[in-house]
Image (cartoon, rainbow over all chains, first blue to last red; front, side, top):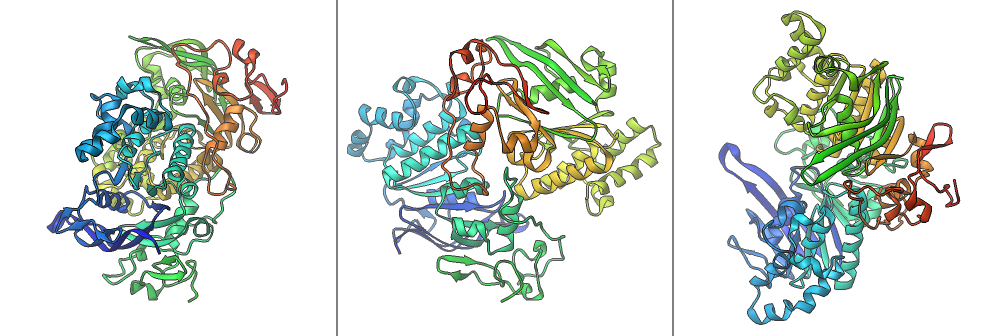
Length: 316
Length: 323
């Protein structure tokens, strides 16, 4: 398997003592070259923390992260494979673009991390203009400031900034969540086209399952720091294996008839203890067996989940 | 008809010119009905809600129309009279529950204050009713929650408290402006279920303002689709979402990723919303509409009934012919 990124037993903790929060627990993931990999979960599930560990903004507390089989983190130091190889697009283009910089300065800024020869080669006016046109902006926009643009246009600027260094891997952290539906569709389609043209690999982080399904080949579902299910997006969203994935899917309001029958959390139960499944207290199909946490196991080729049962139903 | 908005136009006067935020907006809400107002940012859906509540900014001017609530024109009321309607007859729930709650007052006390004011009961009775109100919005252990401060509660719990506050009077009409947008989908699902249940049990009418067509499908009996400060289509939720007639409604549905949708590519809507300072003379959607012709740019279409209860503001028929 041609894995680009691999996470092995990755932990991330913030704070200490009473304030200790474990944001990511025992995460195992592999992202293949050329795919769009989705990471879905609710607020606080740890999905953005994983994105930040890949780009170098947070270091893992334990575990290994490799990029093309070379460790990304070494003794708390981020070892970039090559400056600009991994880039990110954030959710809110309002706060991720410096309001005092011109569009040109914003887009070429990542080049400062590159060796001077490469910087010159990648920073030519012709290359800049063609990139700008490709993301749907015009040459005359180069001298303007972010406030002169709409939300969708600002996100196009952020995409151009991420692409100027010719990355192979992009972390997209809720890139369209702040946009209107009609504009979201423009940006999603642009990202799809760019992925094909430039042979990019995406980690697409979102709370919106419909967007993930539209964009991604494979997807991982996170709940309170745990990865509870990983599998191929389409079949998994039709017949989710983990009860939490099922609840997540049935909660998303749909214009059409729901594809997954409605179901909700169970009334919170007493904590099952330290060994219990992470979803024990809210799981609608919990059993005594769940007091012992299930292993994260492969159920079908390329489809794994952390549940004792298949399809959340009580037969083993 | 409980609420009837007729030909409402609102302008905002600013340093950079006059913005025509609403243009001839008409909308009605019957008793016990849940009506959705759906639109993208800048479509005027929130301005419509604020007009009903009499909470428009000082630089806003109502240039035409009226808002009739239970037979009275709300726009003609004085400040005191408006305050009497607000809260008691019309409740409101906004997007961010933290900003709607007093940060340093226990939740139970906040509720008791509102109940005391609107129902004229004793302090002790109000506190008892406050606990009851928390139970009504399905909060477990309401006695315990009543003693907590807002910061001690989760987002979903806070929004339940805000709903309990809005429903405390109890009002006949609840206006909810993006009330679940800041919440996780699983929590949103529960809050929407709660609102529907409260509406059914007490006969409360709800105006639900949202950008999410999925929520409209799940919650609303009728819907008004707004674009650039105008209602472009209105009708029963089933009619509007299953057989949309206005090109904007159709385009919006094509641009929306949906889990239950066949795997069609999303069709983005090109262009942008017109500048509300310079409203086009013709149809506001004409510049982005694939079916627009000369007549669309010249004259503004008015809402016309295509079938009983289903109104569309478009010069073209559903198939592109003259309507």
